[in-house]
Image (tube, rainbow, N blue to C red; front, side, top):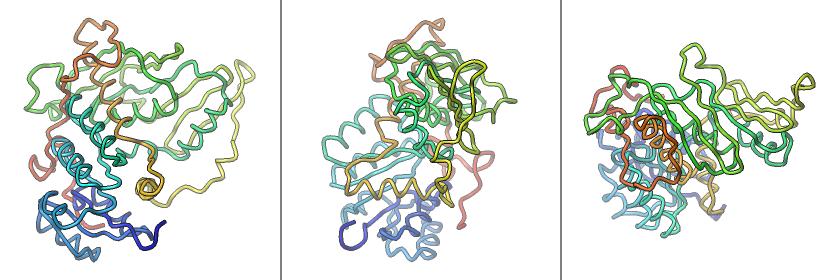
Length: 361
């Protein structure tokens, strides 16, 4: 890295998810946390004292008026992500990140991705590529042709509870593993969970809910999304099938299979010996730090915008007699609201039934 440490600010760094980022940046040898931006004043100051962070601000404008950090991680409720990421890009922050889903409106997600690109700000989003061990290594293994040409994929337990709010992670992983552009979607949905219906939704196509169906890719590969079933909730995150083998992504690590029919054989590629991080958040932060110099990150805002578009297409298809919906969507004003908790945060909606009140770990 360049001489000295990278200056970092975490927006929402004392929240239920943001506290993981604060911890990881505090432990990173190349980073210095310059500030927290936190509306929960008492909790923010407690975190700042614990991690020896010199400044706590109540809003992004106050931070950027005093300093433009090298990296800003905006770990916020969805309703606030768009404005904070754009403010950082327009101020000249080198790397900015947010969490899932990227937005509730496709046009807003488009604008966020576009402005970051125009301003030269590297935009990372989410933690999908670290959901399971060795995701990045096994994707590279697939890319060089070990399982042949990709013919299909599956998310074996569908998209339970939330097609967008939680499902976007799985959609990002699936797209990353397939390495192809989605062209069409055919969707079905299940009734939404009562606690996941946002008050802002004006019609049924705007409500986040369980979904399943099919996603078609260039070249003819199809991803199957079976109807969600609780008993299959740990059956595997994503499966990829090729002409010469298969890969299953599991919590314990990937299962790699070569061959066809009775000749199928499990194999252990060399990357199985690679160490896994002691804490899952460490490589998430490390890829943002590397992005300052390289100008590139994995798991981008573009990737999560694509996942949001697929989620929206699934719901639109379901409400239109399951007819095929072509991508990209023509109407960019489409909205899909996540739960009120994801949209506004526990400090507004309450933490009961969602996450515990954030505390220092």
